[in-house]
Image 1 (cartoon, rainbow, N blue to C red):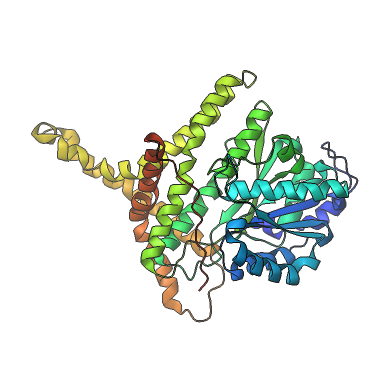
Image 2: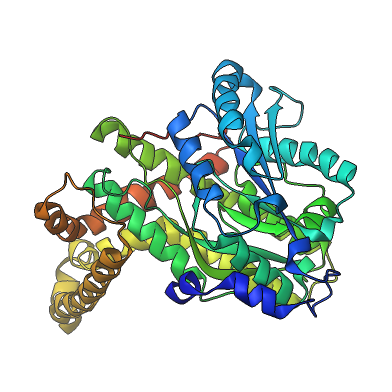
Length: 437
């Protein structure tokens, strides 16, 4: 990731010339970027920060189309914010659009996916008027708090023009939850680093990688599959599976090894922050609904090799099961046999050795926690001037909460989300509140 951050992508693009992977352009300057930013009740400070980051990117701004995708349900607030944003940033890009997603459309679940789909279709009208070839456009679906690093679009363009079969590829940056990391409570900070580490690890398995949160893909591909689903909560993963089955398994996600930064969960007080972390994690875990979608689509599609179905299916199912139970099992299995085994178990040699073996395993795991602390310190943005050295000590010490975080703010909300599906108590889309202190 650090290597890609320091790479001169514009220079590499200029030296590359016409691509050799089937994209019919003579230069990278023919590639446009469509950036869709769905927003709902976020404060203008959040939107302004995101726009500032877009302006600071090194890609030619005359090749960038920005869509601020507002909700009709938030019309009054959205008009005020979009008017100021358009006034200050509208002339800095090739095109700047403001869209309003209507409320209560039939067959929709109000949320990110529905708004994203509406905004992209509105942008399609402009693209058709300008007669820009769809394969010359990369669309990036971002959360409104997504701050792109300066070389994101040049890096993305290079990957698009060099990967094999680019129209069958999504592109996934590494999401780092660092925007407000110094202002968040300790528990939220530990949770945010855990999420960042998980998604960083996933980049090392591109054969298993699927899209999550902020990601990019060819506009032609998005158009071919009918844009994003409007009736799902986990639209960021569903669009990958739409493409996977549309192209009979000939679709993949390319890791960019390049970061984008988003907000860690932070509210006005600790109690609300903890509540929001739980609800956000439950919404993410609600993506377990992709399991039946995958199974039924796999049964229907006979062209995808069985081996590929089993490989992708196992990764999807095992991931959601582990999410919900692994932390609880690690916590319980060391002492549970002693508790329920009775005198018979206590008399065995195994009962004598079990605490020693468990202790050894947890000691090894603790060394990995120390490594995680070191990585987290490397990732931290510059510390605000009003924080002293004690804040650095706190950032280290707070990692003792990791068992508590993994059980009560990862496993339990995942189980809760799975119970929603099991008992037919279907969820709507919950928007994580954004607070800047």
